[in-house]
Length: 368
Ligand SMILES: *Cc1c(COP(=O)(O)O)cnc(C)c1O
Image 1 (cartoon, rainbow, N blue to C red):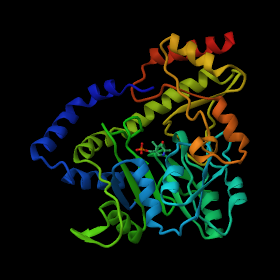
Image 2 (cartoon, rainbow, N blue to C red; image 1 turned 90 degrees about the vertical axis):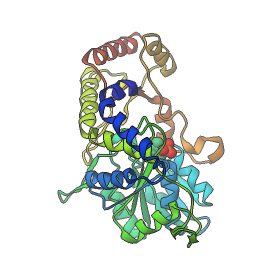
Image 3 (spheres, rainbow, N blue to C red; image 1 turned 120 degrees about the horizontal axis):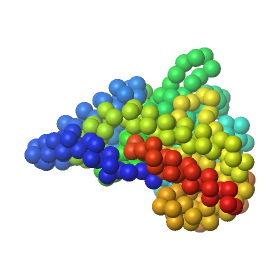
């Protein structure tokens, strides 16, 4: 889906000295690169506090732990997303409540959220899926009205910006009370292993999250609260420091690839190209199409035969997963799971490969 080894070849000259320097200093845990990366990412996003941690799932867990929610509190999250948020809710004895998403943007539909609000509701978790922001202005207004916390899962949309109706522009992950992200290798800002971070503009929450991520200690061997062990490796921080410098340029390449795909597919009746949400920029973590009329399995097999990768994010909505099964019906989430297909997109896409993918894909769809 993306060519990480080609990207490595491009950045090798900067990456190898950075890696070597960590190895030479042998500062594998909490080396200076960790704090330096947090500072640079704070600068890049414009979010005051960046607390690095071990992965994006831990980031969500830390965010929820920091809110001190009573057992059984309800957390509203989208039904069509990655499993992480639902999973950490269950682990923390909270109840994930799944809400419908918008069929065009794939993101949590603000109009659906209020239907699920009960006296037990404490948090809304919008997930900025595939590279663009949810309607944060509406979601924050609903949260304020019902006195709820909001945690933005920004694992897929780092660098995206959200437009407000007063003309202001806010960074994805820095709008809600807390934001989270992941540096999983295939994410837009990917490490060479696991990594994640928590974002907040709130000084008190930041201090608490930092403490929670470090076994609940502010002072070594003085444990103020029950925490977890969740750290970003120094090696990963050193790698991310190099890669962060290229993030904007890589995003532009993703956007150009998406534009080429759009242009090639826009008039095809059998598919829907991804909608650009008017209140957000798009960083194209994924280029996700909907196949309205066709056998997706067969289409993917034909693509594979032609040497083209494709993936389905996500083949089963969360409320239909065995571990989270509910009686709920969320028709949009369910039909999206059957219709979506993601095509290769990354920082290393030649004009020739884009042309090959678009012409082959069109041919396959037409044959159907
Ligand atoms: C990748 C991802 C996560 C989890 O990140 P990990 O670093 O793999 O734990 C959480 N939420 C979303 C939406 C993701 O895409």
